[in-house]
Image (cartoon, rainbow, N blue to C red):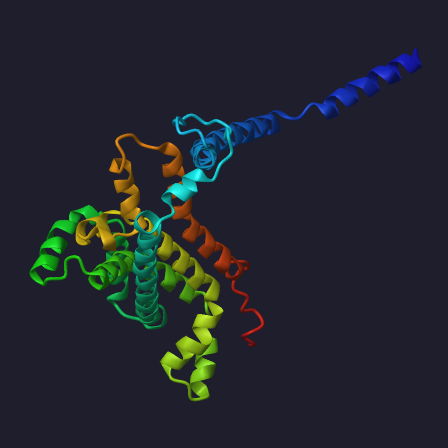
Length: 299
């Protein structure tokens, strides 16, 4: 009798331990729902990418928008689009516009963020709010007066003028990001350089910029990707087909044939995405880790 009672009590205790409390069950249910939602969102991004990848290597010219394994596997789509008129010249134009625009944006953003980060002013907050408002201003709202200005100044169809305007479109968010990264650099390091006779610009170049290199890499990647995907500005301001970048020629690719060749379009899309991926891989080493200033300042 005593043995049966002990066994029953042990089973009851085991069942009590194995059964999670109600609040834990609710937490697990919430995590499961969240995980399912994230999987659905991930699938919405992955499925189109799989179509682009499979269609680019599919040698069947009748390939449509369905996701099928490449049969036969072929590089013919890449050979068809890799020519001077379709790929090489637009790629060079896009590189000139975006690399030049990124350099202009980075230089101006750094010089603008320095006084916003290091000096106090009653106008700093209104100026920052104005920058924040400018980041959400749709580019289509200002393209009509900008195009009129370019025509009056005879700057339409100019690569340099288009590059500068593309840089100005990315400048507000770049200033905002650069200023936030610069705030993370202790001013005591810069004051020590001033004590040794360095000027503010020397302190910016030799102290602040090396320490905020991961932040500058983030701003550079963000700016380049934004400019590389900019379709509207070069489409309006560059009239000559030989000056248009890949972001515009991928649009005209739809009307290049009587019927859309989806395999060639997918191959062109992969080539178009390649510069952004390569830039991320080159600068990814600078993105790891946070700012470690603990050993740089001693009390």
